[in-house]
Length: 159
Image (cartoon, rainbow, N blue to C red; front, top):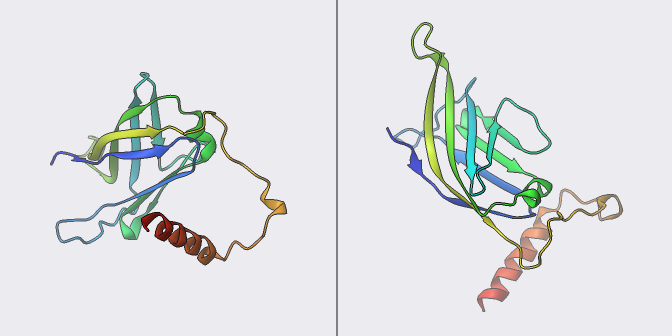
């Protein structure tokens, strides 16, 4: 089966988060226990980047939530601020724990392909926003504050 097409955007200088749910034809999550995933892209400047789930890096986090069939890809604002390309073609691949055949290596599936577009800022600059949160309100369990603010902002924009 050919890979599905999916395009998405990354805002330069902001934290990025995307998740992908891998499901069968009946919309049941495929258990990804002991699987690996990889995203590779070729950017508009000819540069390549590879992101793998079994690697830990300060430049990205790519994890699998096996029982949900979920892949979660995160980039910090410092990483996206450093990007100097306008778009990138990408592939998302999965490697299952079973061999294709005895001695044939693991089975690999390309499940998604597409284009990543880098959205530039209105105000130029390559620095990522970073403040000292030690001196800020320590309430990390108050997501309602942000969601209330965002809902208010959306309502105001739509009126």
